[in-house]
Length: 254
Ligand SMILES: NC(=O)c1ccc[n+]([C@@H]2O[C@H](COP(=O)([O-])OP(=O)(O)OC[C@H]3O[C@@H](n4cnc5c(N)ncnc54)[C@H](OP(=O)(O)O)[C@@H]3O)[C@@H](O)[C@H]2O)c1
Image 1: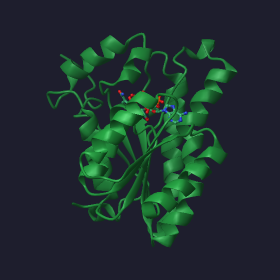
Image 2: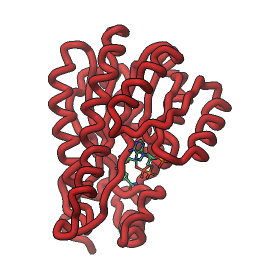
Image 3: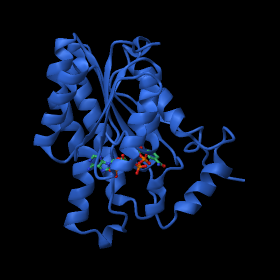
């Protein structure tokens, strides 16, 4: 087990990709804190499931937009689980509209959850990582950061800024043995897709057009996060690793 004795925080760790990441940490021996916004049911299920793997687990209702609550949550994790070694900024949301229809509220909602949260989460966890002589921060992005999808402007821009923020944090924190990197994925079947008018089309494209022959699964993203948190990734700094089975590369399709 690679992460025995370590403590991991996963925001949005109660559903979809975040839950797979939390499960990976639990299987690898870490104590795990999972954050969520509103839905207590999946949070309780996640705690139950990870405890059955033998992990120490806590679930926190913590809106990542709320700096004070984030500070409180990180302090509670550190005192209850014994510090903080890994943080995955995974929670995301978005106002799925064309640019000409986006409201100020929708824009701020998306940017604050998807981008700003990483900055202030990093400010809270880094003092605890220093106490342990280093740590790992991983953000989760999507192909829309560099490509254009219908109704994805607010999320796409927030993810592009997230990848840039990842690089800036990485350079500032590298001398302290804190690595900061990003994992970006193509379409993954989670509840998030229900909020897209073209959700079904996205899934079909993922199934039919992924050169590797199958869709990316939540575990594929979790495995990349596990690698970035391992000793083997010590010298990977400020990178975005794309986990898409080759989906984003072909220029022409048959
Ligand atoms: N699904 C895809 O196709 C795909 C592809 C590439 C990248 N990604 C990225 O992967 C990550 C996870 O996506 P997903 O599809 O697994 O999402 P999801 O199934 O919609 O789950 C979202 C999680 O984030 C939590 N959350 C949402 N807003 C929050 C807030 N303000 N504060 C705290 N927690 C909040 C939710 O809590 P509640 O349960 O309380 O709502 C839930 O646990 C995101 O960063 C997403 O952009 C997804």
